[in-house]
Image 1: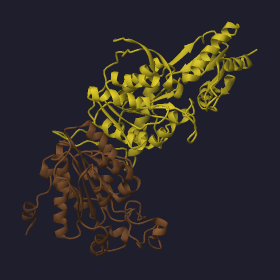
Image 2 (image 1 turned 180 degrees about the horizontal axis):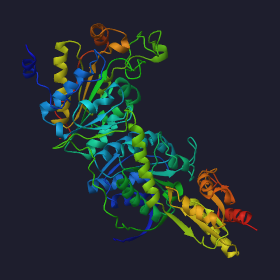
Image 3 (image 1 turned 90 degrees about the vertical axis):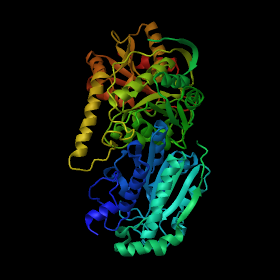
Amino acid sequence: MNDKELRLQNPWPETLAEKPMHFCPGCNHGIIHRLVAEAIDHLGIREKTVGAASVGCSVFLYDYLRTDVVESPHGRAPAVATGLRRALPDKYVYTYQGDGDLAAIGTSEIIHAANRGEKMTVIFVNNTTYGMTGGQMAPTTLLGQVTTTTPYGRDWHMAGYPMRMAEMLGQLEGATFVARAAVNKPANLKRCRKLILQAFEAQVKLNGFGFVEVLSACPTDWGMTPEKALQRVADEMIPYFPLGVFKDKKESEHL
Amino acid sequence: MEKKKRKLIKGNEAVGMAAVAAGCRYYFGYPITPQSEIPEYLARVFPKIGGVFLQAESEIASINMLLGAGSAGERVMTSSSGPGISLMQEGISYMAGSEVPGVIVNVQRSGPGLGGISPSQGDYFQASRGGGHGDYRTPVLAPDSVQEMWDLTILAFDLADRYRTPVVVLADAMLGQMKEPLTERVPEFPPLPAKDWITTGAQGREPRILKSLYLADGELEKHCWDLHKKYLKMKEREVRFEDYQTADAELIVVGFGSAARISKTAVDRARGEGKKVGLFRPITICPFPEDRIAGLADAGKSFLVVELNTGQMLDDVRMSAGRRAPIHFYGRPNGAGSLPTPDDILHEIMEAYPG
């Protein structure tokens, strides 16, 4: 297939800016950004949507996703999105956060936004490390995983266990849709695309809180090639962070 | 100008009422003594007038909700006391850096740490020296009465929109809890600049980004100087203060907020005993009325700074007066049982009086 045919098969999403991305080779942010753009375009809401960007490798979200964006302090995007959405009842909001942002410093904000059933969509990218700052332990780092702050491997006596955010948030009454996906192979990517769309529909169609945790590779911090990194997602991450849907309210109490 | 005189109103309630009068319809906050009446008032009133009252899970969440709703162009307010304002500093810095307006009311209690719930002025540094990280200033207004709790809250919303900045109203527990007659008045303000920067969805226009991250060479320096230019404009146009019998005074008591109230009575008593004493009361802590104090110093006055802390505004008075004026200090840092009486201050006035 030539380039033109590829483009027709797979048109560039309007919400995705046409520019090279700065992410490391093999990083899954590029794919996940694109899936978010596709969902926004599928629903036709680009001009009615405001993003709350967070802190981490995705801090430059506003360079790639062509919606209005408000930069938020580390961990606070769900609170910023709450303020935005409460002030903009006819528009839509989303956050895009990494595992440090959402599961460490931001645990309070995400739990309470979900608990209040805030009308928003949260994309949570879990790569079991702190990417931007050079590979320190994250709440989602696996036991035995070597990071720059667990040089002997994560030991639960010192550092606790890896956190499963999707399961935790799935328990909250206020949440409408909670799922976990991965993009390490085409079949998972297709499913991820559907789940991200569902997380946006939870907001747009059901006036509820939608959340997708996406398992991602970080070849740089893991010290692996991109191919080996994707293999790690399959072999080590998916067994601990199972893919699936943890909450799927078909109706919303908000309507 | 609409005026309505009410019987006794509590200071904290006056703040809530003023927010409503100023057109604020979004409040995000967290309970803390001695200001919980502010969220409680708005929790009662906002639902009746289409406002949004949200009790956030923490002060950190509160200030970030302000960042969000302010980015959407709405007049927004939060309120807290010292410990909660500490938690908000990061968010205030982000609002300053992204130039998002909002009003933050600090009803000061005693500190540091858990401290106590009695009035103090120990957060002067926190309010006036930025408080959060980075190179910014916020306007800080210091009321001294229930009437000013109303007046200055209304002014705060105007300054916030006029300069695209968070604004701090620096009150204290006494002002928050006391009851005085209130006249509900809203002055005419000059027209405000258009809000052509708000993030409401990129319909028919390019997407807008509200951010404070500037990484390219020279970008952030330029941004900081631009913020500084705003601050210089405020210094030029927004300084407010009260001169009480300062013209012929030999000794001028300098105080703000509750300390100034109590000092006024002491000044009157001193005058009654034939001493030429006056009171200078900064109303804007930031921008600080340094020129006026310099002028009083040049005119040969002595100063007695009275504060409910161990000496914070004292630094600003010293900087403004320079080395040409004698500056005395009387501080009562706070805590239960430590509020000075007019006679306590009168005693200090007599000690400090020249000659």
